[in-house]
Every structure is written in structure tokens, then in C-alpha cells.
Length: 202
Image 1 (spheres, one colour):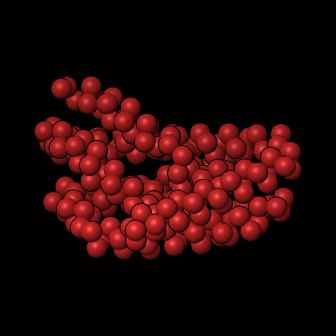
Image 2 (cartoon, rainbow, N blue to C red):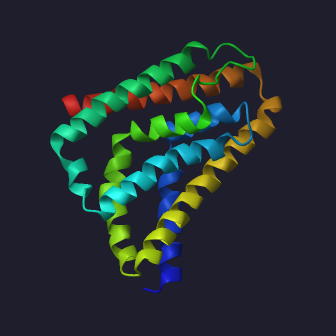
């Protein structure tokens, strides 16, 4: 497979993953209410975790994240963080003002926390991510660098688009829609957090 075709494959696989509803998307929606550039911050926070994980996988630490104890710790700790963040958002979803729906964390921190708290993020990287990196390595160091850059730019594009749409369209929302959307985002975080804990303790 030629490098351009491989990178095109990376874009398709990356977008199919990033477009799935999840904690990172939920905080992007929430942060986008206040800033059209929130998605950029979320993507940077998300990318900090990703580049660290790519480096660990490259140096042979992928199996570390497959150890049952590690998965259990990530599931319980990560789920607890998501529940805490979701509860704060859910409690204030009935308030329609500048501070409402806006998590106390900044966009970069929120992107980082929701990423590192998600066990399925690590599962994706230690399965699909490893498979893609194995192919990227055949192109040398430039292949690894381009692989990560293309993957991250796919994330950046999607989250930036989401926050921009939310910010530009918020004046069209009714109060009921405001409450529903941000109550939903809080519920998503709580739901994912509960599911992550449940999946490792049962």
C-alpha cells in the first residue's frame, strides 16, 4: 500500500471513530456553547493523551494497557471522573446564562480528562491503533509522524466543526432545547462513567 492511500485509510478510520457519540463529544458540545474555538482546545487535550500513547505503543508498552488490573483501575477511576463532571453539568442544565453548561475545567483540560477517563479509548489504540501503527512503521519514522498528524487533524476538524456549529446556532435554540441538550450531555457523561465502572467490576 502506498503512503497516500494508507493516510487516506487513516482519515476514514479516524473519522468513523471520532464521530461516535461519547464523553469527548459531550464536552465539546458543552464548551461550544461559550466559544466557537472550544473544539480546538478539546482536540489539543485529546491529542496530548494520544501522542503519549502513540509513543508508548511505539516503544512496546501496548500490552501494559491489556493487563486486567490496569483496565480495572482505568475503568473505575475514569468512570468516577466522568460521573463527577457529568453531575456538575446535569445539576446546572436548567440555568440559561453565560456560566451554565460550562464545566469548570477549560477546554484543553476537559478534552484531556474525558479522553484519559475512557477505557474504550485505550482499547481502540491497543487494537485498531496498533494495527495502523504497524503499517505506518513500514514507511519509517515519517510514516509514524504522518499517521499521528493525519489522525489528530481528523479529530481537530470534527471537534472544531461541532463547537463552531453549536456556538453559531445557539441563538436559535429555545430554552427547552437548551435544557435538553445540556441535560443530555451531562447524562451522557454520567452514563458512560457508570458503564465503565460496571464493565470492570462485574
